[in-house]
Amino acid sequence: MRIHCKIVAIILCFGVLLLLYHFVRNAADEPPLKQVAKENYVQTSSGLGNIVSVELAQKPRPVAQVSQKQPRLNRKSSKLPNRRGSNHANPRRLGEPKPPRKPVSEEWMHLAVVACGDRVDETLTMLKSALLFSIKKIKFHIFAEDSLKSQFEKGLNKWPHPFTLKFQYSIYSITFSVGNAQEWKKLFKPCAAQRLFLPVILKEVDSLLYVDTDVLFLRPMDDIWSFLKEFNTTQLAAMAPEHEIPKIGWYSRFARHPFYGKTGVNSGVMLMNLTRIRNTLFKVGSNNIEWEDLAWEDLLHPLYQKYKNHITWGDQDLLNIIFHYNPECLFSFPCQWNYRPDHCMYGSNCPGAEEEGVSILHGNRGVYHDDKQPAFKAVYEAIHDYPFEDNLFQSMFYPLQTKFLETVHTLCGRIPQVFLKQVEKTMRKVYEQRVIVHLKHPQN
Image (tube, rainbow, N blue to C red; front, side):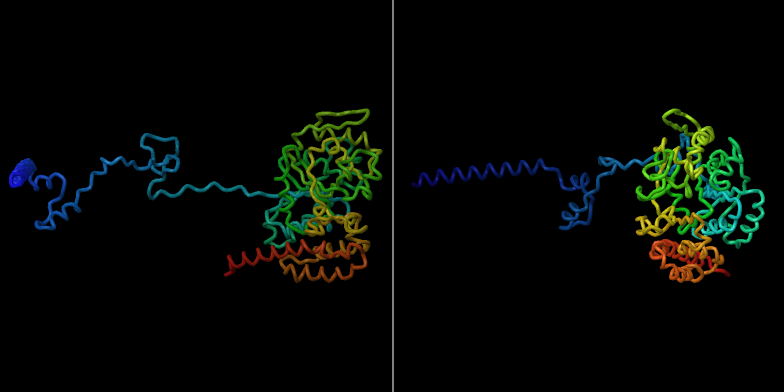
């Protein structure tokens, strides 16, 4: 037992000696602490805090050694000039004045009308309604007999200054470029056929709205002008149907010539892209004769010669024939843009007017000047008698409401909301615009 204890003690002593030898050897090979600090750490104050602070104050590695790349500038959006040269204009130098801005061309709307006989006062009332409610400026193209020119100039020059800034006008003589001028002039109504020659005469005008003298705007002309943007690539004119119900429409019952669609179209309100009309070749076919690839001006006279014994409504019938054979060229807008007595005298049959109100009123058959349709006459007199610059509600809308009380005995007078809805909405917009302008630019 004692021998075993001695052996264990000897082994333990020998192990301790080996450990001591190993420890002393490693300590001799380890570099001093100051050398390590110079290579990897920043020297700080001495003492116990030296170890802690040395480890926390480790030097940051240089940014150049880190694989981080700054984002490159977008050359398209960079405002820095290219030193090697560029195709772009040189930047403006410090203190150099800004270059003047290019003037933005102002868009004008073009409105055409043809007046002969005793239509001067009626025409001026139509132009007045267009000017009162429209936003953009308008150029009036007035085609009239030479004896009426001075009357138009006198009437237009009487309008007050703020409104004269919104329009320009030109007065043209009645001219027909092809065929017998006297024969064209007597077609249907005096001078009405002149509208067929507008693309030929107004060669500098791109687009145009033609209206009869007995038309009244109850909302801005800008709104119907916007239909031009809705034309597809083949459409070059826009009109409203002659009637909404084929069973009681005139063309579907009595026409002796081709007509557009199921009920024909009414040409009292006609929006035209004159450039497209001038550049398009039309086709007209029949059982015996077929014409193809004819320009607008070349088409009118032979078409009239063929159908002159079969047409009743003159130039409107010729337009129906043309668009019957070229239906892809016509854009049809709703009945509230050409609202006539036929839409209410037999019962209300214009759904668009019932929903939105009348946009453009067309008082054909002389209803502004007789007592057959007092609702139409009431609207005409309200606009005719309205003094420029007066309050629209006090001087136009409220008197119009009062006059409608006297029309309830007629079918058209029983639906006053159809006539008043849109014009009231338009007047509110005009009134708001005037108030805003007055507040922005108060008079000194």
